[in-house]
Image (spheres, rainbow, N blue to C red):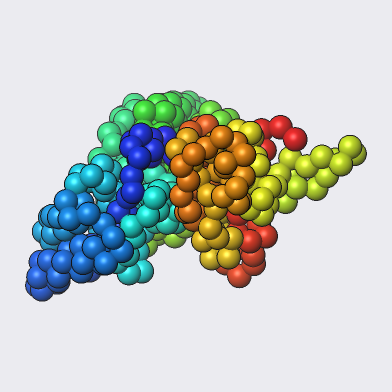
Length: 369
């Protein structure tokens, strides 16, 4: 997950209100229920010590969601009486949560908004293709391409003129497949889609697949649907979920390989809070890996005003010359450091639902050993 959009959260000192609200399954009573949710969230924050202005801002923002048609929900981050950031969620949170702390509680975003692969669904036939952009927040038209319209159909005769005609049909198919592949590549580049789902008969899908640029081949999925059929939402969601699992498994495999020491006893990955804190202070985190259920994620660490001012013990910050310090969750402190240095982060929960990898739930690939 690219964390750049979180920069506004670390440009203010805090403390912060962090609220996660689901908006799925609307009913006739939804507006009233969400109004009650807004009151409960504000009350919970006030009980944790939040100022009145910030509680009011959160209550108003949650209350505005009562008429929302968003399929999953939003995260709200507020301080000083203002909601600073409210990103939409790609997955509904299991419950409404409200937290008041020195840092914004951004760690849940890795699972609720982090891996949201966008798909281009290409409905292909011999004449061209229609493109549809699909993601967690819905679908939209992404254009179309029309190839040569004649000749398109073979004949069953075998005289020379008909064989010549069939060759022209073959040429038309190949020409159209190339045009579709070119248009699909441009569409992917413009939308930055993570996946390309090709729908059509076997031959047409394969012809387009083969003509796509090599850089896109590992993004392509061919859907087993016949000509004219449309992909159901569950088909797309299954493909997106498989992509998320595959991506997490790849990064976990990289991490497991990197944490083994080389011939000089140096490792390119670390795990555990003390090692990660040291790596964050030295700006060595290249990618942060988090398992949200790991015990180290909510372990307390100490931070100063700057992202690289963090320590396992409060006395360490004083040694570093930091006069002001706050106790925060380890995952949130490490995410702040990752944002400051441009490092991405990923939840490995899809690849390790029952295993505690990395140890304690926190690990990192390093920029240098």
